Length: 341
Image 1 (cartoon, rainbow, N blue to C red):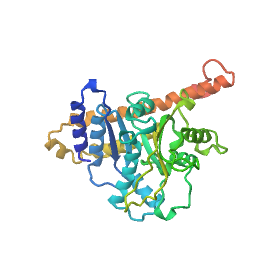
Image 2 (cartoon, rainbow, N blue to C red; image 1 turned 135 degrees about the horizontal axis):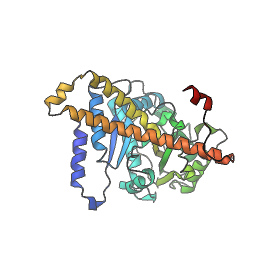
Image 3 (cartoon, rainbow, N blue to C red; image 1 turned 30 degrees about the vertical axis):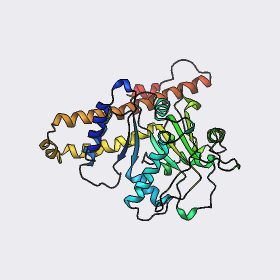
Image 4 (cartoon, rainbow, N blue to C red; image 1 turned 90 degrees about the vertical axis):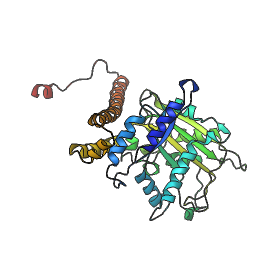
């Protein structure tokens, strides 16, 4: 929350020349929705988001509150410590960067992840989820098949950020599922097979109950999945609260639900800035009022970009429904309401 990470990111951006084609990704730990470590977190968060908007190629969206909830509800740790929280976040980062350290069965390098889940540069804020997440007490009670893991990845309680209660009602631009570990083939230590993962995705998109179907943008439909596989099983430390499993998966979902994180911090920023609370501290460090206004405008642009995307999805879906019903021409208007106005 102090801005050191963004300064380091800016230095890295200057060090990497354009010709090197290197990708820069950042792990963004957003402030909790309920608790805060400093009073000026909203200021630092908005300044950081506004500056890194043009520096990083990919920003993993995480938040402390979701990590706390995962420790409490999924791993049954009543009073999570920083070690427990770091264990959760480490598993997420490790699972999504496996291709940097191990040979892959199915490609999932950072270049390929960026290529497949970022349709436009401004939509580069994927939400991250992890599965399975269980306590050590549940060891041996569940099988964690590729289908069960894939299904869990799209459940709100497995998200590492608080994207709101309507996660699946938002629209996905794309999704990248990175599996690691052994498959469910019954032939020993064989890596997870691509056919198992694709079959799990197919079953998820066509289940008997439609409660957990991720909705993609109408122009993407069923083409939005990128799959990566690494044959190395997940690793835990001796004091880790995680149960040791043969396989694990991380999901990077480019969803419009991430807009909720930006809106939450935007509102907190406005509440402080309206009363000019703590602004003098930043002025004393060389900031100006224009810096506050510019950061606020940059942040508002991010929120507006996702709002426009949601409207585009709505209009396209309505048009597709009209075409399916054989209707042509512009949609009818409510003449009575128009006359009243």
